[in-house]
Length: 294
Image (cartoon, rainbow, N blue to C red; front, side, top):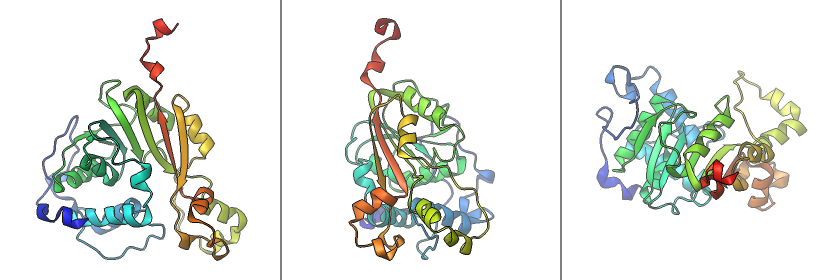
C-alpha cells in the first residue's frame, strides 16, 4: 500500500493548504500540531481509535502525522483489525457521486472513497481533527471539500448529496436524531446513508453480564462510556429511511473466550461484534411535493 504513495511523500512544514468551504478550522498560533502540549498522547489516542485497537497497546511506528503514519493506520484498519470495512462501506461503488463524510477521526475511510473517484465533502465538528483530515487528503494528492460545522447544521443545499457516511459521531452527540434529520435533508431522494456505531450487546456487555467480577478485578480510573446502540434502536433512529439493513462486525478471535474460539468467525461477530453498521436509503417518494402527495 505504501508503494502507491511513496513518490508523494511530503515533510511536515506546517498545515498544507486545502479547499475549505465554510469557516476554516482555527490553528492556535498557526503552528503544526506537533507543537501541542501533549502531541504523543494525542497522536496515540487518535491512532488507537482509528486503527480499531481494543487493548490500547500501540507498537512504535512512523513519525506522527506524516504520510507513513496515515498509511500505517490505514493498513491496520482495513487489512488487519477491520478487514470487513472496504466491502461493507462500499469504497469502490460510488465513483462520480458526491459523498458526505461526517464525524470525527482522521478520514481514513473517506480517503478511500476519494481514491475511487467519489467527490468527497468531509464535515467534522472538531476543528483540530478536521485539519488532520485535510492533511491526510493533501499528503496523498487527493482533493476534497472540508467543512467545520455542527452536524445538525451543515451548510449544504438540501438534496445535494448522493451518499452519506457517518463514523465516530452518533455515540458522541447528545441528539443523534437531529443528526439523522440533517442527513435526511441533505440526501437526494434514493440517496444512501452508511453509519457506523458502537454495538450495545457486544462481547464486553455479555462478559460483564455473565462475569461481573471480571470488571471488578480490572477496574481502573473511571471514564464515561460512549453511547451505544442496539439493532432495534438503530432502525428506529433511521425510521424515515427505507430498506434498512444492519450488520454487526468487528471482533478479533483473540478477544473471545477459548471455549468459543472454534466457532466460525462470522457467527462470533454476529453475536459479539463491537460495531453496528446500518445501510438505508432516503425514499424516492421524498421527491414528491407534499401538496401533490396529499
